[in-house]
Image (cartoon, rainbow, N blue to C red):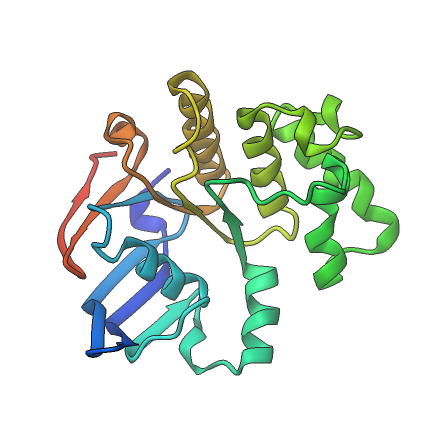
Length: 235
């Protein structure tokens, strides 16, 4: 990939996020300006409480900034109404959680189809086949008719990634996606993220896993709510 040809997918300008607390106000992130190109695998690192998850929530539109602007794929996300934001998020962002968040009463196939059902992004007749294609992409199609409880942690995380891809969003975000996985499985998951970035997705991962730093095009380190470094790996 030629990074010089990549256009910014994520643009944050002077973003601050404050939360009300008993003593008045807590500033989780302060005056963050950040640009992330499309087709990149990017990590956000930092100690617990540094502001990583808040930054991720701002990028995904789960939280709105107290100050500053958030532009994702050309859309001013911070200017959207709650209804517009929900619709935008469903079609533009795929989220991968540390604890998978698969619905236990649905099969693996049904879990992957769910975002398509919510957003009506594909005709009903096409959703099952698309879900099967995504499960094949993450090497778990043979588990399609099983329930999450019968799968290993690594298998469940692969399903979660397939579900995040269901509506073909340009942005995939993952919050500590390998925190509960063994090192071999974690390596496979990061390899999968790298393939997704290579295929055109922008993937942003919050992680403590420093041993996988070579997978990332850029590593952003946060401390006390501010970016203290942003290191780009030579292409």
